Length: 334
Image 1 (cartoon, one colour):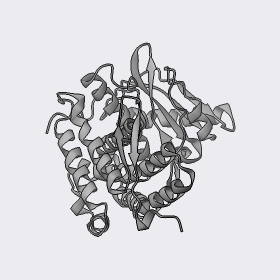
Image 2 (image 1 turned 90 degrees about the horizontal axis):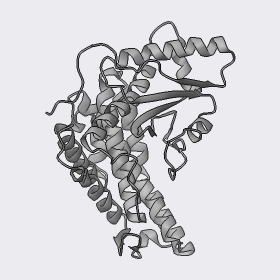
Image 3 (image 1 turned 90 degrees about the vertical axis):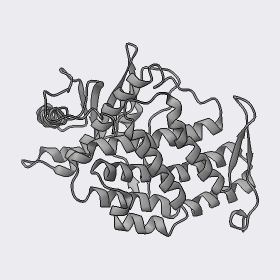
């Protein structure tokens, strides 16, 4: 495998000073105490992962507001929103930001969750949560160095590219972060990620078909492609989380019985197995990729899954697309 960038314990790569913004804490003293704990966690992780590109950290009790307030440093970027689904709620995010022409990362945490690190004993579950976000920082630097002037510069010119590109990016981002943070994980991590994946995949087809049924009435192509793309995109994204965790520990999907049994009997098997191969191949060439097009295989898998779900989107031009959504018994309104 190509050099991953992970080394044995070494001087920490955590930037100093590191700007930390804390919101909603009961007192300045409580905020300072927490900030010291958080920086201690980050310092240790920075001995194993490259945190040079970490720009700042925000921790807030109003997590959605903190996300929305992140200055991305570039106009035209979408407002950040927390993941909210029946199978999981987002409590941390590390978006890319642009600072003086350099792509960096800004961590955002939900204080309701991460204040658990203030306990006397190290909270291994939160240690891993923080390490996962550090994995994003580590990977951001590697990809920006491999493909200068690409991160944060991509503008999807049409609906098809947006849906497929967003899915592909999410798959790699979460796979890499899970892979690099696996060394900090606890025994239950793989089980928790398997539960998230199964929760996302189990009802994805039913939910996507319901979106298509609604489309039969409202006729909004952009809405239905976005909704169906999100359902199937989440199936791939949460599979990527799990695969990253397993691969980071030198394991395969077959080593996790519950996830493997679910995939074996589910329609997603073909796509998860293809995703497994694609991500393994990309990680084996980590940092030595010859061209950004190597990652296009992830878009191909997302496109094929979308088609399998009954939605085919074809580009007419750079700006226009044509969508075909054939009538089937599963997608006809009752």
